[in-house]
Length: 123
Image (cartoon, rainbow, N blue to C red; front, side, top):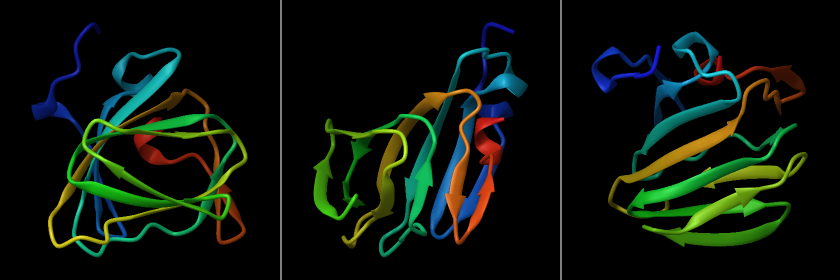
């Protein structure tokens, strides 16, 4: 399947984030998972770790992140590069929504609140 359309994309809600799956094994991708994230003002992800590298491209707005205890502010056009095993929390501390495009390799596992799982938007 060479195209994954936005109109057919699955969406997932978590902690003020709306995640839209664009590429994953269920969509025909073998090596990469790609999704977008709409981040509401005040949204805050749970602190979590991934076992694979993950990259977040800020498409609109500003996103704050805590990456292994380092505080980061990323604006439109910036990329947040998360090495495997890093402790991450993403936040929108502004009054405006933010948008991200996110990519990782297929098979990613996340660990949050003592539970390890495959995020459904990567499957």
